[in-house]
Image 1 (cartoon, rainbow, N blue to C red):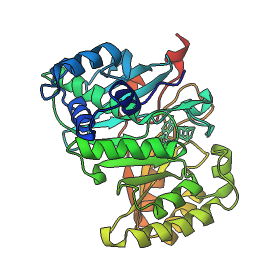
Image 2 (cartoon, protein in one colour):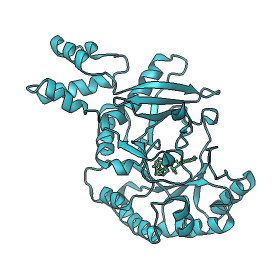
Image 3 (cartoon, helix red, strand yellow):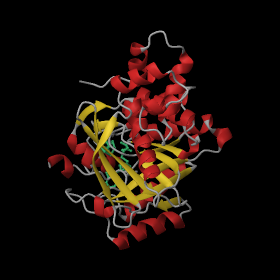
Image 4 (cartoon, helix red, strand yellow):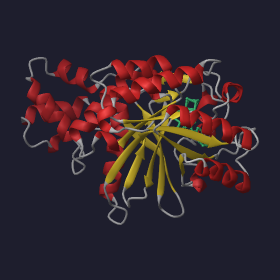
Amino acid sequence: MMPIARKEQFFSLFPEAPAFRFRQFETALFDPTLRDFSGISNMPLPMRETLDKQMAWLSLHPAHVLESVKKDTYKAIVELGDKTRVETVLMHNARGQWTVCVSAQVGCAMGCTFCATGKMGFTRNLLSDEIVDQYRFWKIFLHKQSEASGRISNIVFMGMGEPLANYDHVKESIGQLLRETDLGPTHITVSTVGLLPMLRKIVKDPEWPAVRLAVSLHSADSDTRKAMMPSSFDTFLEELLEWAKSYFEKNESRRRHLTFEYVMLSKINDTEKHAEALIRFARRVGKVRINLIPYNFTGSVYRDSLPADFARFETLLKDAGVTVMRRRTMGDDIAAACGQLIVEKEKQ
Ligand code: SAH
Ligand code: SF4
């Protein structure tokens, strides 16, 4: 059975409660020194007791937590109220702080042929509570570990699932994270396979928060993209280009760039021809940044790019004046780098 949202549970327990009580409750959830409701000192005692009896402090609990050898990446497989599981990752980032990678769905319906989650199929959308609790879980984790303590400075929606296919809950979770944490919108990134109806909705939605968007492009050649991503179609690239114009128009004052993610698959999308197509496309779009992602999934028919091919691709882009970044591979030993989540654990 699908779990029930905390807000709904709260008001069914306390139908007469004023709105400020719920806000108090919600704020307390983000205090990493608390472990249960009894610690919410500004709430009446009978209310705290009822909450402790009726509601879980976290909507998930860890089934496994894996640590990379370098202790710079942790992965948790967390179990939700209905026993389904998702993965969430904590990574040390270039700023010396931590990035949390969250899942937005149990499984994914998009079926990208190179992706472990795509192979699982779709089970259900996560509730907003289940998304923010992945952040809360790591916040508590860091609080408990004095040696690895530090601040979570970024959140990326790059775990399991397609965030824009769970638009309302993802939007709600971002709202809550912006209200209850010290993170600003530019420190939250939503990665999408490129669901155009939802991308268009974002541009029109005055309440969509000003978070960063990353579109998983993976190829600027339509046929290659269609082979990698069954959700793609012949006119996708042209429609994305049109959409990007409207996105830049809306965000003109913010000088916002758009990120394209590009997972490097040997001989599939990493040839000179593909680099040229990407350069042409990036120039047409304008303010873009390309993130080249090393591929990491052993149970796949695809191989990661050879180092020489990767370097050549990167150089071609740089020489053409395209802003390009190579994403660091982290947590290889626990298959935990974001977006590279494994299904093997599920089989155990
Ligand atoms: N569904 C969203 C977000 C989750 S995946 C999306 O597709 O954008 C986050 C990123 O990791 C995406 O760019 C995705 O294509 C990429 N990815 C998926 N599997 C990967 C793998 N095995 N190795 C490297 N990147 C991968
Ligand atoms: Fe889903 Fe993203 Fe994986 Fe594609 S890459 S199957 S959209 S999680």
